[in-house]
Image (cartoon, rainbow, N blue to C red; front, side, top):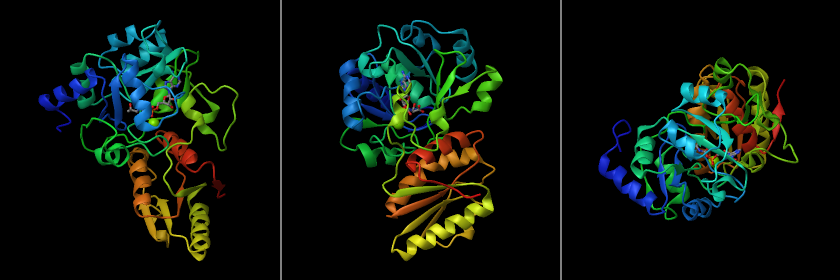
Amino acid sequence: MNREKPEKPKIKAAADVIRNGGLVAFPTETVYGLGADALNAEAVKRIYVAKKRPLDNPIIIHVATKQETLQLTEIIPSKARKLMSVFWPGPLTLVLKASEKVPKAITGGLDTVAVRMPRHNVALALIKESRVPIAAPSANLSGRPSPTTAEHVKQDLDGRIEMILDGGPTNIGVESTVLDVTVDPPEILRPGGTSYEDLVKVISQVKIHPAVLAEKNVRVAKVPSPGMKHRHYAPRAELVLIEGTVKPTVKNIQQIIDQNVKNGKKVGVLATDETKDMYKADVVKSLGSRADLPSAARNLFRLLREFDEDKVDIIVAEGVPLEGLGLAVMNRLRKASNYRIVKAD
Ligand code: TXA
Ligand code: MG
């Protein structure tokens, strides 16, 4: 499928599936989504079944125009309008007060709704041709790393959904930033493709929910974003995350490798370009340069899936700086490690 100029007949066929209450996986600029007609509660319920997703985890609604947001929400605060004009289409999801029109099945019973306009011609063409907003979580089985290629979608959902639109590998590689704009200052509930630094350039104050940076499993009485409490992004192998400056990190990782090899384990290392030649291990993969955090974001989920194909028993991962897209990468790695984090310094 041509990602710049999507072929009309394929889009038409996919839109027919959506309009008939079926499920279509499609590319966005972040990760592949699993789409259904957002205004059809039965279709939305099928998403939960196909993904084996917990019913209390709400789903993002994707729109092709800003006007479509008006029917989904009671009110769009002025800061939200500003953010929409700067970042849409793009990897920013806004949590708004939901209107009556939004099926309860999408919001997991919350009175808010998450909306975003993806920056991808296939996604936009599909929404327009379907003539309905499209509900779409990431197109992976619940708990697995999000899919950044059509092949990943197939690995998880083949036979469980009607159609997959293949638009090649996605560009950003981590999901959108989820920003709650029902509170002031707005609060990041999930870091993603739009960085904190970019947001504060537009609306000077942005909070970051404590769970975003958590280094252990925080038990908050009421989580504002149910996705926070579910184990996520996890490869099948156990993952240990080593955080710190480069030299001590490398030393710590080699010790962990040696220990595990002695115990008969197959070890994979998630390294960076600067360090990848320093390790002696069964499998070493690089996220890219430590100076290029967008490349780490782009490669992360694919590499986690590859380690599973290599059948490693344990993945030892290097932490990256918490700046720019590094915040999203570290949030995913900490969750994937189930908070098995070693401080190297
Ligand atoms: O980039 C993305 O956002 C991708 C592509 C397909 O658009 N979608 C995606 O969806 O990552 P999903 O379902 O995997 O993640 C949605 C996140 C979850 O953490 C969910 O809890 C949160 O958004 N969310 C959805 N609706 C919400 C709401 N009303 N309030 C708070 N959090 C919400
Ligand atoms: Mg997901």
